[in-house]
Amino acid sequence: MRKKRELLKTVGVALALLLVVLVALKLLVLAFPGAAESVRGIAGKYGLFGTFLVVLLGSTLLPFSVDVYFIASLQVFNDPFALFVVAVVASIIGGFINYAMAFVLSEKWVEKQVGKEAVGQAREWFNQWGGIALLVFGVLPLSAVFDPLTFIAGMSRMDVAKFGAFLLVSRVAHFAVLAIAAKGLGI
Image (cartoon, rainbow, N blue to C red; front, side, top):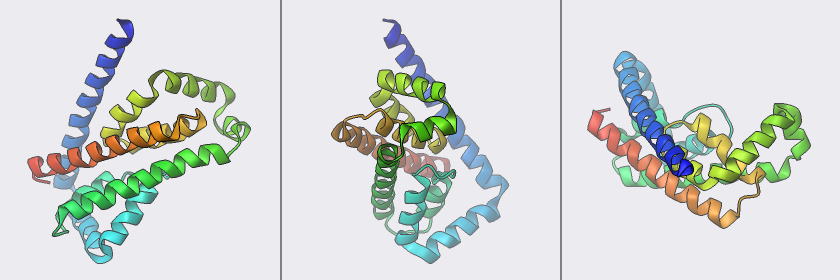
């Protein structure tokens, strides 16, 4: 029962965060119309291949969010479904890069970077919430939270097929929510 309440609380917080982030994105576009125009210009210049690269790199542990780029790109491309597919595929590949990096890097190296206790806590937390965390945080426009989860999934040796399934569902939902919200908010 306690675990179920914690899950419901986490989902509620996630939905509230989603709403806050989407409203914040709308406010940013209103406050900085030139920035949105710049992103649209980049998307128009480099097309779907550029979008693929931006989303791929942004879906690894590199510290930038692809969500603003994706939303601005929706206004540039004539085929939003193609943009959606490219973003989902690139994001999944980025997630698998994080997952694979966890296998390549030694655990001692990771512990040296963030501390043995932090690694242990992350692994323990992920072993309890792994798949659910990938689904819930995967939908949110918070790559700073989600991208490290894909790394921790690899470090925790989550089954690769299970990881891929959670990653696919979360990434499809993530970009669908962004596209629907952008259209609904008029971004």
